[in-house]
Image 1 (cartoon, protein in one colour):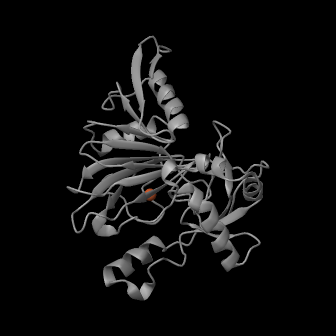
Image 2 (cartoon, protein in one colour):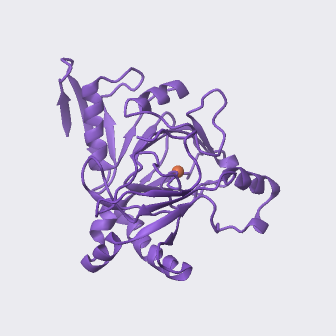
Length: 306
Ligand SMILES: [Fe+2]
């Protein structure tokens, strides 16, 4: 599909090529090293609304260039609520295999009241094999639910926190990993979000859960685990997942309101490094129009409230 936008007088031809039926598109015809005109930004917004994850090749950006690109979609967050930024680049979070491996399904920073609306990842160091990023379309997952489960999910709310019962227990960690975890949880956040989030731009409903969702309001820990596991199994269906094999100089933009992602830990001890810049988001809204609320933790140093 080629979109021609000429709202600014300058015609921009963007080519959008689907990678899979349900998620992902490769974009060409956009020069990310320049300030984007409003028509191009609008065309990319339309594409991300539809495809959830956009891939750009041969981008040749530095940190400032990635920040400028991300900023064309809205105000940026700082790097992270608790993890330090890349030196000299307060909006850039280094996602480095030496600092841990994000091989768990999650949506970025959902433990705060208004998690980022968009995440950008740029390849810096790519292992010779493996290291793919999986990105799942949680709206497709919601549509896959049988009608009674969909109706049930519509009524649920979940507590998201950064301080949870991790897959690897504290005593199984080496000293460095323990230190990283204590930095990650140096401020405890807890936020209650709808399990089904209505996308503010498209009205589409998606499952809004992922690794930080730890408990369903009104259910016991054991019941919560079972319900979350059941819903999550629809998110991670292979049909709903893009498996992106990184190459140098690539940038992936994904809609953090309606996707989950996972960094596959299949590259042995090879280094892997991506730089992440995120665009500040809105407060999630559930199917009945109610909004998320914060229980614990001030994130005002991380993200502006809309
Ligand atoms: Fe992430």
